[in-house]
Image (cartoon, rainbow over all chains, first blue to last red; front, side):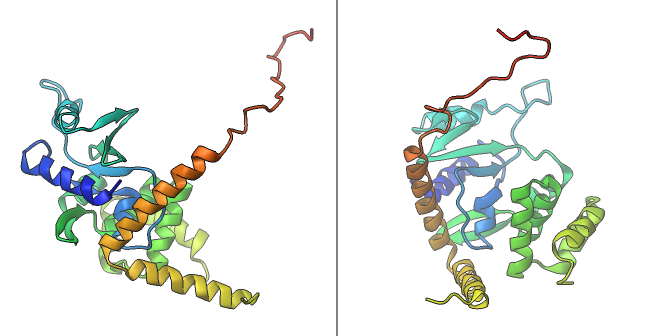
Amino acid sequence: MSIKEVITVVNSMQADGVIEPYAIGGAVGATFYLEPVATLNVDIFAVIESVPGSLIANPKRIYDYLTARGGTMEREYIVIAGWPVQFLPPGTPLVEEALKEAVVRDVDGTPARVFTAEHLAAIALQTGRAKDKARLLQFVEAGVLDAARFQAILARHGLVAAWQKFERQFLGDEL
Amino acid sequence: MSFDLQKILESKRALRRDLAARPVAEKLRLLDALRERELAIRGRIVHPAAGVLREVPRSYGEKKK
């Protein structure tokens, strides 16, 4: 069971043209910048080709590729190297931008494409579940966000009011 | 061991800073280990519904038997 193996397989998918450049998001993406937080799955964001003649994403090519290499289906996940992996198309302009501006990080000699810290934080703000707010607080407390870059993302994607509310709720005494 | 809350909180912050500063490959290995541990714990938990007497509320308008 190894996330590094998952990254190696996803890199092969990209090299073989099965997916466009991908980016790791979610808790695994956040771990590139923060302390590790337990998670049960890996979120991979990638542009997934549409069913011919429609706008519906067609994951068949991904599943065919992975099942031919030992991957198994488990509900909405495909299990690679023991990890349930979910392939997600960018569902909002923010995630589309995050995918375009993702950065490559080295994992013991293996390149891994991951969302920037600022985009991960903005996505957490936009998603807004309790665990996303906790993650956003971690980003703030860890001091890993470039403030100007983060504010620019919030402004571009209409998240300034949501951020001000978050500041009032959780960061009132610190700012 | 100390029961000084300030010391405990500072110690926790220091541990989190130390974990965050470790190389990415090491942090991902920690995620692998955390997941295995979590799955092991989940496997041992007896589902709360098992063996518990539950009363299902009647639907609105349904008469008591």
